Amino acid sequence: MKKVNLSRIALVAVVSLSIYFALLVLLVHLEKQNPDAGITNFHDAFWWSLVTITSVGYGDYVPTTEGGRLVGYVFLFGSLTTFAILIGQISSIMNNIRENRRLGQYGTSFKNHAVIIGWNSFGKTVTDQLIGANKQVAVVTKVKSDIDFIKENYGSGKVFALYTDYNTIDHLQKVNIEESSMVFINLEDDTEKLVYILNLKKAYDNLKYIVSLDNADLKQTFIAAGVTYALSKNEIASKLLASYIFEPDVAVFNEEIIAVAENDELYDIKEYQVLKTNPYIGMEYEKAFYDLKRACNAVLVGMVKCEDKNRILLKNPGGKVTIEEKDYLLLLVNGHEEKKLTRLFHTKEGFAG
Image (cartoon, rainbow, N blue to C red; front, side, top):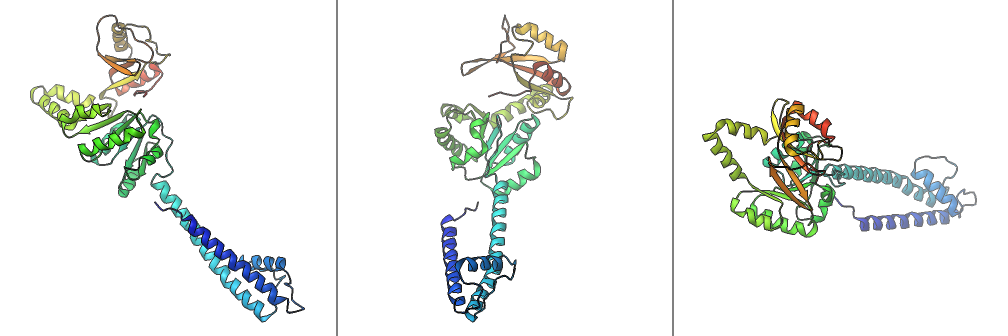
């Protein structure tokens, strides 16, 4: 990122203007020596210089003395230099603006989006899943070549990329981090992630953070540090692998539903917030279970009760549990029936933050 050196520009401007006005004074002094001269005052000299520098050349005023013509040569060659400098500066400014825009320096207006700090193959996989779920993503990377890859592979309406040093916390305002629904820390190792989160929470304490860990033993350490969700890659992979060994059909189904459905035939577990317009407000969970199965061929597998800032997950609860506004319903559904649910619930899937 190039920065404009304002002090240098100011110095060049002052020196240039000083030389310019000194030449005008000299021209008037030289021309006054000729009684037939047309340039006899500063106003005439100023008008002639503007006409000469801009290459308009009206010819209403011309130097008549030898000294005045020498000054005229200076202005003629100076006009060429001036135009060259102006064109060069304008081109440089335009290139600088384009480069800063490419690198994300002018920020984004994304809201309720996911922020991914750190880019690699795993971050790409997560981004693909988020886009598949119609979620906007803001990526922060310290590698310039990542910006080109992201822009070539994703639309600007879905993914915003910012090139900056991770430790420059203030720059994270450019990804509108305070309006994000979740921040995924995707750095190289667990120690780096922990240190970064501790520093980040000093500036943004109220955000929700998620990390993927190489060492599952550090999960509670990260939770204690203020991380909302800490997942172990190896732990998830080992559970799925064991399931393939002793219950392969369950494993196939599990792998399908934990990812975004790539076509309308595949199933996925989706989460919907209960708005005031939801027809199931006030209905008992058990009745809603049968009604949703009949109306949308969707299986209600659980719900989340939000009390203050706590989220209580109820897995297929029994008894008289009533659905209330701001609850979340978890449903197993395929792409075909998802469209019915969206119309029925008057909202799209996803966590509202």
